[in-house]
Length: 427
Image 1 (spheres, helix red, strand yellow):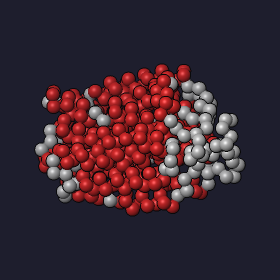
Image 2 (cartoon, rainbow, N blue to C red):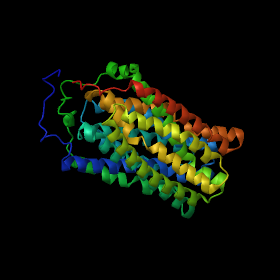
Image 3 (tube, one colour):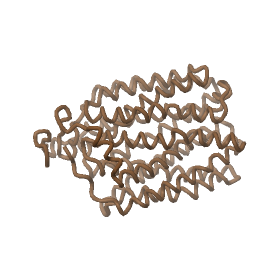
Image 4 (cartoon, one colour):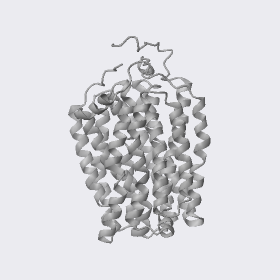
């Protein structure tokens, strides 16, 4: 073990891996993550009335929906770098307040430029929280329970998304679409204050180490960029990009696809899509985390096997869901597709932490966040919308998604033989 002056061994009694404090912290961070995705996807459910009111075509709507990704992926590396060098609590608190207020302000937009600008600010606030939250959790839970904790944290993704669809769908049919943003955004300001009650653990605490980032073991730019030279990290992130591309497009265009292609009322389409998302997301995230944790005990590539299987299996199911003529079969196919897409939610982040040393965890999450959103869901809604405008058919626009899923599945399959023991903790 290097750098003894900056790394202190701590007893198992002092580790936060299974303490009540660790689980309480996980619950609060998961609640904030739920609001994160609620705020992100409420826009999808009100896309049709918003397009009409602000006079947006499909390509404009796709870019407006992706605008927050611009702020998100551009600032994620900055926040990841700060999160590995400075205390995370107050940075995260500020991020939650910013994204919550910006979500509420989305309801005040009067044109495309206003909407685009305020959604960028939403992305900046979310980037601060999302890059630091998983690394905080990794310092609370030992490696044997880390994937379980991260899985529970990411259960908030389908739940928050579903609640966003439900709230937006109700306002789309029964009230002013602008009010959906007000009700979605403001609760985050209150929950953000709960972060003040939490104790932030030292880096590596759950691994039996306490890394003092105020003195040494600070992340530096060359180390972070060097991650891109690691073949294992590259394959993981590129496959992650394909998954993110598909999820982003699904999330934005799902209710509109059901409304436009299968003629379901918009409110009903949004509610159904949200319910399917919540049900499949919950079951798949839990099952994927459980299977990956147990498989990892037997083989080094346990996490990656779950990841690769999910995208390879999702490819034909996704194609079926987007081409079948029956609304009922389309809903079933979409449900199975989303189930498979959520299976690797916990394992993919756990695999990142298997690759990188303790003092680079937030930076690694931030770097992966930058790549998956730059090449993933930043442009995928607009890509689908652009093909839809060009061909005159949204159904043809969404057919790019199963192709992308197949590419992601192949990349994660290639990663399997390169998987090895976790990276040594570096201080």
